[in-house]
Length: 172
Image (cartoon, rainbow, N blue to C red; front, side, top):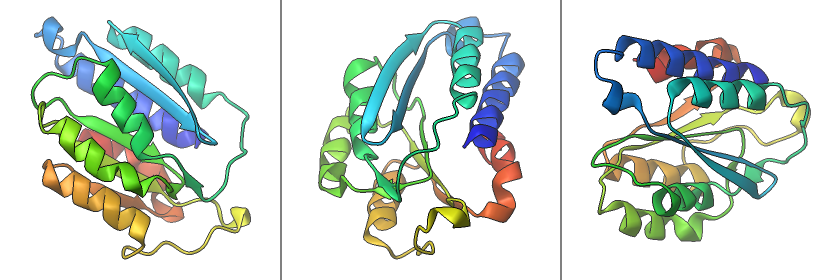
């Protein structure tokens, strides 16, 4: 995930530099990092601080984890901890499918106030992890896709061959 997080950082840099003419529009960022069913939540008031946090996260050497993770709990944390303005996008990038699908309707209920597009981007784990092959019809991905589509977001799968193109996915 190191290269993916670096690409996310580059996409944030690219987008915020193009929106410099409207500083209030790019003045608040929430970041929820999650791994192994644990989360950390931080709010940033400058793009530079957010980019620094992403760059720090990209340098982690923690490669532990398994094929599933909490997916909707971090979204619930974002919806409850951050003041999300109307239609501000939420991005969830993970290399594990959701194991907390029972919370997807709670995400839907909470997000009905801000109507934030929720974008789920599932990164195919390295083959050495032993995770099963990706399936668009898996219950975890279907739950993410349903929530995403409900709020005009996207639910994307990024295969191992496309990992170098995550920045383009986020930027376009």
